[in-house]
Length: 220
Ligand code: PGA
Image 1 (cartoon, rainbow, N blue to C red):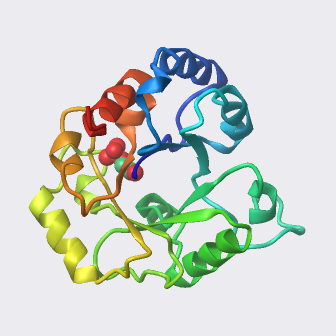
Image 2: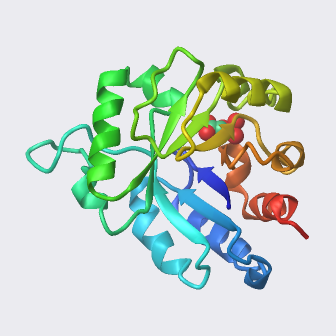
């Protein structure tokens, strides 16, 4: 199974989401035969809308881009795991932008990871380098070197594989690469069995680019 994770970050209006869905709906869903999962992670207001609109694409799942450190309660503006439960299947935790702009520490991120798991939401835990700790219960580990995010300087396949080797991940964890993956760069990684999927920012904002990436990783 390969995973294509679309991280929309703080992009898109509801009109742009509709346009994205219209473009994505041109995809011939019959080409996907259970070997690929597309995980769309939009801003919170679009989560339920997308889930509803993409029902005819069973290989499309919805993820959140973050989850609250707190549980349910008096935490104005927070979105706790309880609120996401039953709506999303995945959540991105510890993206480098959260670590940088919101100063999220390993302690905070481990707690978020636990909260997701308690609600049966699979965490996609991001690390920037080997200095970032990985929670023992992380299900997906996404390696995103800072220099590769949004820069067009994607890490070479050799470096990604060497990095993975140094992590000594247990076999239950899926390994994801992210950082300037697009329809031009994806195929070199897609050939590697050691890479289970991709976390895609800018290129995932365009439905047709995402479809092209899907075709690149399908065994046609
Ligand atoms: P990018 O972003 O694909 O635009 O480099 C990746 C990410 O930040 O998850």
